Length: 220
Image (spheres, rainbow, N blue to C red):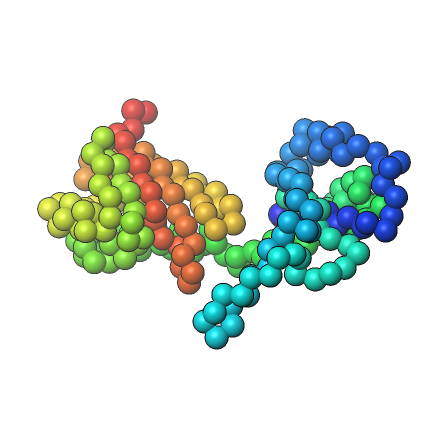
């Protein structure tokens, strides 16, 4: 599970004896726990933006004037909250500031939704229902099929209308979800052709849609 680690500095504490952060970064990176992270500029460089009555209100400075401030962030991949807390406790800033550990919001069943989307695509292709096929794609989707590139649902609609019903059979399908994007790798048989299909998905609000699809003939 992914956790956001907010590194909070405190100007009232003396950080002159704080240990360097680099060994912590290197150790967690080597273990595959730390996925990404970076320092942030000082609060004085922040800009706070609000919209009230349709008017954009800009205030130079942080959202709140406090002695503690977010000095940086790290994204951790941990098996449990306890593991994330242990990693946070080893961060040098924890000795002079504070570390806020917060889990990422998780989709209840992102992989299941994507598999249902693929099943819908299969049913629509078999019935030759072009509109149901198109509904599985984002409006700006890009499809590369055996070297031929199509961009946008209108181009895809014309191509599907020219083909008609397709007997699509999914032989293998692996899905990897990473927050609001996902990737699928499938082996598909269509009317005697064996194809490898790599698909990019994006969560566009209430549902997942295909944003990129790359289709090639399977060699093995």
